[in-house]
Length: 239
Picture 1 (cartoon, rainbow, N blue to C red):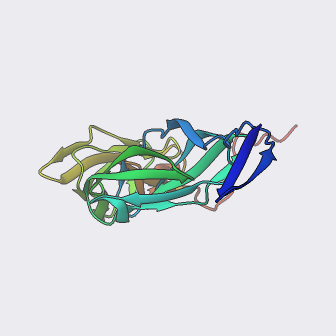
Picture 2: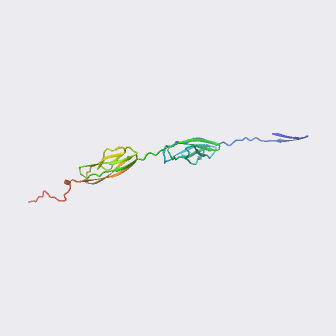
Picture 3: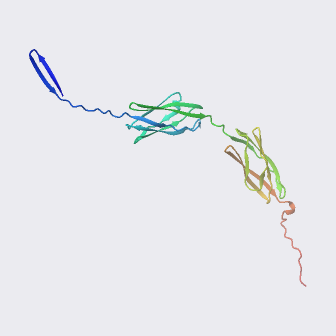
């Protein structure tokens, strides 16, 4: 309580004042904590990598996110999401050139500010492996019991070794060699039946495969060829 007294000359007036004190409790300030940005995988130019950063938001339901720094243009931010204090934001890494990129992620809510460093690495694409100039000489026609051989050649680009396979069992391959990007593999034709024989030869290197068709002819020897005449022997006539 208080008394206000006003005096003018011989006149005095007093007024009683009564006031109640009220405790002021300020609203809690927003707080951002537990910010976690997973590591980006190293990627090649032309591809993208994605992570989801997480954080905790207290005393607020909304937060803003920005990127800054020399490497910021290599990243794309999604929309921050908050659910019962658990926050997340998607970040994409989309580099245009090789190198190490660094940016600063800034989260704001009210007066609360939290920053985190983002780092990612981009590399030049690996040279593309190519198999070129596959050459298959013509097999000589052979008789059954004989065989024919040719050397299949090819050019290997951005690789130093290759594997060679062939279908079926009429054609077989020998030791495959690659010297200075030039590959050679011997192929034998060993038929067991007469006729036209085909198979597929496949060369594989660095996840790339190229195939060609092998064709060869086997013949019967003249002594094995049917004459077309019917022969009757050991004919006996009863008495």
